[in-house]
Length: 159
Image 1: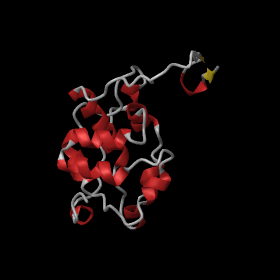
Image 2: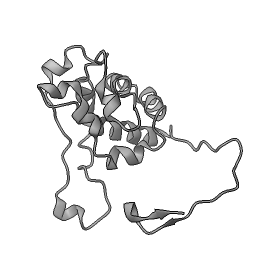
Image 3: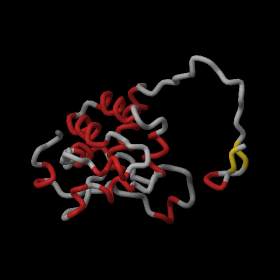
Image 4: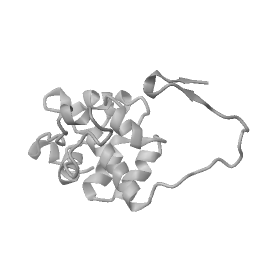
């Protein structure tokens, strides 16, 4: 468990985002550079590691959220990345694009603002990329099939 009293002593703090007027003019990160890391350990420490973590049910991938929150709280980014990758092949995308139904499923959200799971996930994968911990894992054998994506973004159709 992260911080046994974290949910009692620390309030929810969300990373600062860049103004929408600026973001629509570029493809840069939504969050203000450097705004995530100073708050993440405390925010991960708010995770209660519930007996039945409903955040798992809220997450379409079944991410092991309390486990990687614990590692993030302790600053063990490599292990946090390992736990994140155990159920998620592309956290660098899901951490940014997913609407975070895990946060609305967080038990803490019953009477307090929920854990900032999405921000923790983004920080874990960013730290993993910075440390060079994300490496290609090609399959043992190739199928010989190819994929083409037609269109752009979520409007694209896979063929």
